[in-house]
Length: 218
Image: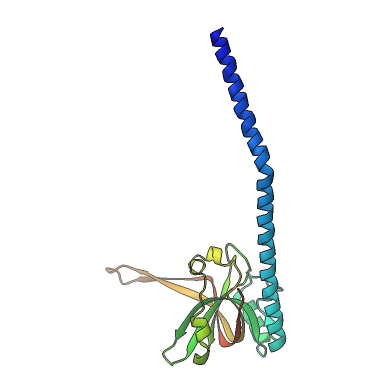
């Protein structure tokens, strides 16, 4: 009888514990879901405001400079380089406006200073199929706001996350040309005269021009 009593007590305890756990999860599940829904709503509203801010900046700059947006939505991001070159040539008399991620500022040996922005051809892409690197001539007197600009350092070096956030600037520029960036790799051995040269194209296109204006986007 003692054994049977203990066994029944254990069953009762187990059932009681299960009921308590179920009560806890049922009771806390709804508030947790509501909390997550509230967070998602706040995040969605924030993203919506950021997009609207960027669209307003683009609209204002397009009107001010009579600029054309790049990349045009009519072109496939994975098109051959010639297609983009043709677009640049066709619109050579107009300024281009694009979403730019700040890269670097460099002074060349001739004294000219260039600022670099990258512009993904496919927006908010995890794989970032292709990117245009704009190297734009800039007046030395206009450097301060770019030198002091603090970009997200983590995102700058981890581009898989970088393209998922808003751009640093909305840029207006006069574009001169656009080319595919090619990398040459040399292979050889010290005891052999022959050297193998491999050429391949990465995801970057390079464009040069002159910076006209840039507005902080984030």
